Image (cartoon, rainbow, N blue to C red):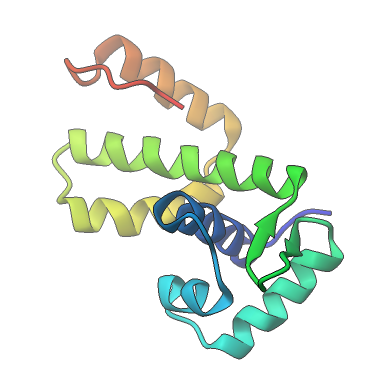
Length: 130
């Protein structure tokens, strides 16, 4: 099943919350994404049905193996794109917003070319590329 951009955003938000807080709750996802709790409930239902998310015994959101793989891929794309934009001189806040949009639409070919170019000509720090 091909996920829509919003589904990818929910999976990524769950991953980020788990990394940051050790747990992801629906209310936290709503806050993170700036959406309503009913929107999160609908999205979680769809993601659960698709096999990307389960609900833990205390109501927390848990990524399945396939959900984690998608979330990690989107998160890695986001981090790399943001880093590239900052390297180019884009302000961090703008880079964050733009990375959120670009992470969903860049082809794998374009992303790989960006990574190659960055490794050859990018930051002198050469941060690890996801």
